[in-house]
Length: 120
Image 1 (cartoon, rainbow, N blue to C red):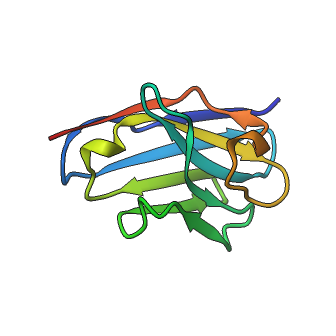
Image 2: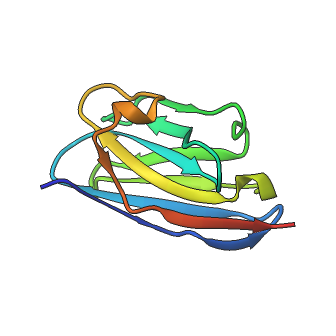
């Protein structure tokens, strides 16, 4: 059974940092982070392939966010620096077999989501 458990969300002031983690069980996956703000569609944030050799970030977060994975623990992290109020959203961890993807519909497994709120 596949399970994704996220942690690390919270409230932070603009310019601050947060680190999200996602622990996966039940397989080895390419994984991604997506976010969804109120009244907006879920959008791609970052992705990493199954062995950690390839990553990608949305243009809106490049230079501020970093995605990484710890293969020994089967976890991925999203380090978020220089946070802005527009980064406020529920952040979801997602997983799929095969290559990393940028479209939410290509991911089969999802975590429960963790709230990130950035105050101005």
